[in-house]
Length: 124
Image (cartoon, rainbow, N blue to C red):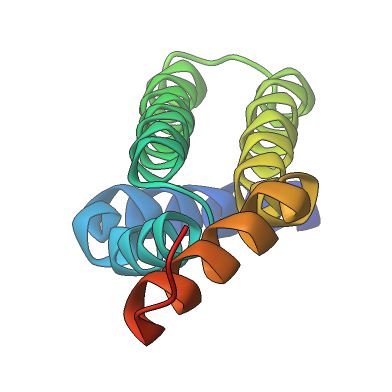
């Protein structure tokens, strides 16, 4: 088996594994949503979850299409570029969503201070 065939076979195995375990991989996405919701607001948490899940779904669908494209004889280099593009977009969106607590640090500080004073019984 030549080197290119090995690379294509490994890619297909990787892509099939990503597709088969799509639901299991979303556990960390939900955990991340919980942290974003706790550190900012539930709206931002749900928004981050929706964006992250859409990007994950887009990446998974692209992997399916690229597997079928390889089966139809498309060159691996073309397929690899498409997969890298969607993976980069997904990573970018996920990093933006997980960084929202940093961008919203002022709102987070106000939320924490308000909850502290509400719990302590201080008057407004």
